[in-house]
Length: 347
Image (cartoon, rainbow, N blue to C red; front, side, top):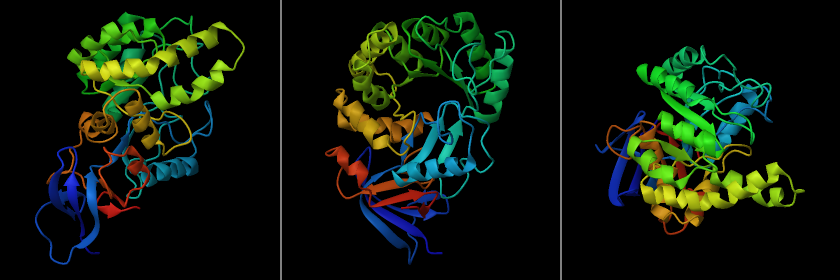
């Protein structure tokens, strides 16, 4: 099989590069006879940092067939790396390893409190047992996910418990993601020093400086929340409607403020259908984040946050190639010339 080659202006720097795939690593050493598969503007692969593939509905079982189909949709959209902060079950061995499907990091099934979250999903240990079980999960996969709060009025995980989870998980080299969509749950997650706050609806903007200082990332799932907003507005008045409409309406301004405060933003699509990372990046840009930084949330900055370098010698051989600079027109994200994953062309 011939060696794959790409060349063009590599983002984020925009510098001209000429890269060859030495197996699953980029090299700048020329390879005679290499196959130049694409030339243009190069991204080091897109990232969906919050996606739950493999189940057809909340609470549904994990299906390997559906999991493969969902991941193919991600790859076709240019996503070469996903983070799944919560799965319907422990994934099969090929997850994240199949050469035609995105790399993956995951947190296994969620941890939730009794009476909260979707009935058939997640684990609900006692508060006493949770830190040890979370550490065991993180030692295996690198991440653990807590449903920090659920419906309005539900009690969130106590701060002392979340702190104990963070301490135990960090002791084994892992990281903690927390679902929070209520003000109190967000306060607790930030105070406990979690690694990423998922959704963050009703997050107090006064907490953004602390998040930036301690390295707590925000995955706002902005497109998913905004897409549901109009439907929620049409519902009869209720406390739940007022909670959702109020929080989702303020969310774009919160995302822009987070970027301004220096918080690491991660692009994530959350739910079905999969393969919509371009929509999330564009929605973040529409919120007031400049296009360069919005693109970073779903590419080089997200890869760096998850431990992968970009388009440089020795880096994993992932890339998406576009005809024009996608920062000038984010609709370019829908039209990749080529998607390279593990040194192989998958689109």
